[in-house]
Length: 256
Image 1 (cartoon, rainbow, N blue to C red):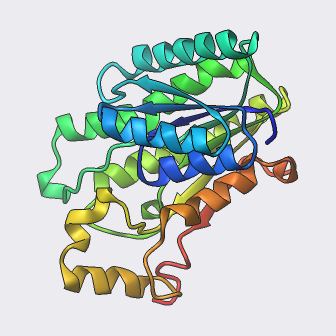
Image 2 (image 1 turned 90 degrees about the vertical axis):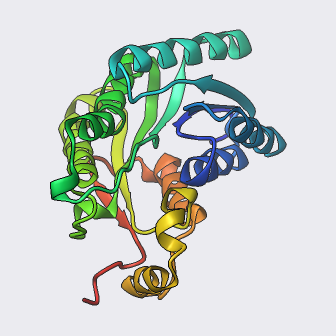
Image 3 (image 1 turned 135 degrees about the vertical axis):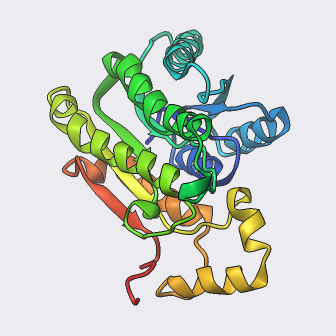
């Protein structure tokens, strides 16, 4: 990763922050991090990236509204900053981690909610890849953060699961065209990870015990568990892996 330029969407907290900081620790020179609105979280993440040895580029953008325009804007702002810092408009690793999760069972689903999730979880990654692919150097990596809920049936998340299933399909579909440019694309499926996204659900002791028991290891995933998988896929050693959706859930529901 030495000297490489990285972009992580949703990079200000949770899994995204662990990925951004981890890639900085691996030697990245520039780490762009998109965040929705929380300046404090973004500043904290940027400080950790800087401490790890990389130059952070903070980009505020809300992918849940007009995701095509937002994706193109994020790409332009990132490349402008990279050009100022390095003299080139090149990128090496794109991690599409930003997403929206709203718990709604079937009868609770609304068009507004599903549209928000689809915009952030599918449309924004697609058009960010489109905008940045011409600038990704040969040997580059695109890594999409999907969800174990595409494999595990959880009736609380039909809209979210459907959007992440589409992201998996997008990963496979783009593999041939990106390979022609020397770029790999893969997706990672986390299971239940202890982040603020699930804080409300995990605050219930019974729900917490249930979720922990789903993993073969009897524990919740941590952001660093997912970051380790992404760091491998971003490395030189993963150059022969593309079009794959990799389960990083600690064997969730395999023992059921």
